[in-house]
Image (cartoon, rainbow, N blue to C red; front, top):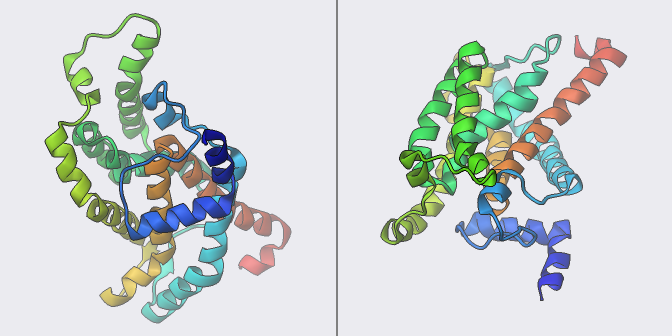
Length: 267
């Protein structure tokens, strides 16, 4: 049975059906087949997921956003007089490929499964998100990741670090709280996707854009947030970070290639 499930899960169309069922009825369980059961903490950050599968999901998002949601967003921007802030002559590669995937996933999706840790992690990550990549926030992000992994790294060396507050942060949620969280999880999942999309309004110079047009500007990010949220819950935070970076890199690579081959098209 396990082999059969693994075979079925290896097909993209089956994962897409699972994603669609999840979006209609979000819930925390079960994980997708392929995750090892020996250490959930390790699997959350380093999922057993092929690059090919990540590329398939990225391609799905690129196609839908390019041919469906992207034109809607472009029309809304034209009607509202909004302009994109991206300077195609100074593409922020590191911010798009590394900084944004890590920080935004910590802010919007890490807490979907780790509520206790999110109480201290998400506020710190929000500071990094608001102020952007600079020396202070880079050190802050490094400290966040270190605190996430410090107890685990010590444990693997058979020298557990005795920091009681970190141990409590990794302890499972009380059963009563877990039941209440499961009941409201669908709303939290949808809210995280909406907030993720809303933050990307900062990518635009909105000028006098009417409020009712603003949601249309970030429809691509809203869909992307749904996929990333599903992947985070089903595969782990590492999977959503990897897909986030891959998704950001595709359009920027196309712009960079066009800029260096047919620059007249972008002027």
